[in-house]
Image (cartoon, rainbow, N blue to C red; front, top):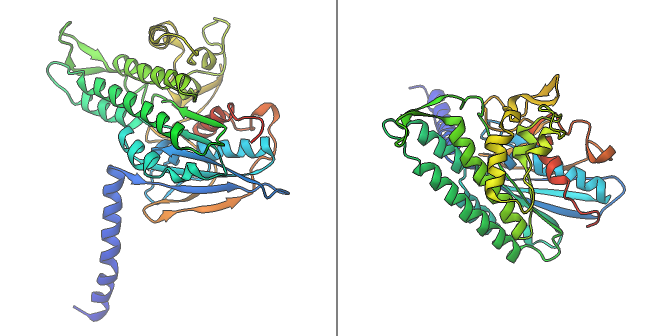
Length: 362
């Protein structure tokens, strides 16, 4: 073999091994951390918002080396910068593909130092999406008699680690933190799940409409997140309502659909689940076509039918490290507390939902 070819192979093989490792990571879990500061003119005062979670807060875009610059936590930081007239550092400590236990143990607990900094004013987290997705995949593969245990286990794990995360953040975040927020789950693949299962229910002997069964589990998880937040001093950004309900009154009940679907503080689980799965079921739409009016819609979900859409550039986040950078805000003020694109992309909508709880002062 010629010397030049041998040298090229020696150079190439480590890179191929690295890429192979990255592909394996993306199929399981992949750390995607980033820090981006909204650098506002005429101020040097800087505060921090810390976001823990999985691929949703990471701004995952299908790449193992990059992520959306303006994922939801950084969108929120832009709103906060305008509200407070200060620079805001958006710190994302996230792991794509992580289940709730992983987010809790390896992000919130193991990386608690980020929320302990004296500049921290907001701590937010999201989890449980991968618990649900893995349970859905398992259920879809079943034949014979349906075994609902996989779905029940996902709900139980979500409940355990959401409560643990809130308790841990309450005990360990910087005492000057003004706001703690959990973001609940949208339903990716809602339209695709409108099919019958391959397994049959033990009681009826019939196949199950998967959308019905998955929506029930998701509704119980989302209720638990918001109600646990109410009890533990957190607020709840109801992404299910923001994504799955239109921004107009489609059923003539006098309420905007996205408002009517929201969790109501203090309501019972039965009341909430009934609203989502029965009473207002006809107003739920797949977030690939989020209607902002009766005749206009935007796509909130990327082509993978899971992750939120975004606008703007990407940053390094994943296999090749993480970005720490800064830049001027896209918008320096917000009329009515909303950017011009607040309802046009999934991450813009989620970031706005978190921002509605921002305190008036730091």
